[in-house]
Image (cartoon, rainbow, N blue to C red; front, side, top):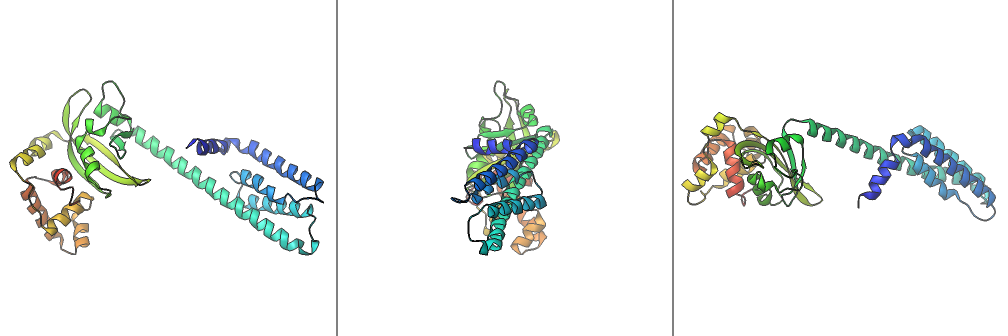
Length: 309
């Protein structure tokens, strides 16, 4: 499906500027000669659209307008139509050629800007020492930089095409339970390396929609050792509480907004309460679900309160 756009993108590369402008000029000359030759029978003025569109990716707006005017004059010069309406026809033909050329020019310019931005972003991701991954709706890793490969260290195969659940199960859970809701959050998770080693890590997670499917991106880094020793694991919390503690409406609302990545002051504005109310409610949630900080709370929320999110 992407073969044609890729081929067009390569064709319209700036390195092809001179050859394509030469082809465009040759097309204009050919159309003009054939139009002159067939003048008593048929008008070929419509064909000037093609060289205009071909040159649109390489000419400035002013040059494009000038070329469109030239083509409009050629079209009328070899026309056998009533000369009474010559000025009107030239005006409308020129406007049509200018509009088409400028439209194609903007499309190509935007495509180039998007492509350049993607290349810069790809370079930034690849050279970033942090582990950055992108996961599709099925939980399969689509993109992973060198930092991710070094952190997760699969033994035999690369990360691309591998299930994220094999390395970071909490990310698979977050993707499965999000229900199409976009969120940004930070969480603590257990990472399993390809060689079987496990360690605690911090993950900054964001979900987004692409062509109707929910996808996930994450930046993963090692959690500080002393922090990992202080924290109560989620498994311990789940063992200590036989049933999921019930949250009231305010607690559920604040939990939802925390999982969306909002700080306390924004949560307070969103709910129409004071920041102190938000802090007190967070302490209540910490006590109920037996966690010590927001990262643990987000992790427990994704695993046990998916319906509220």
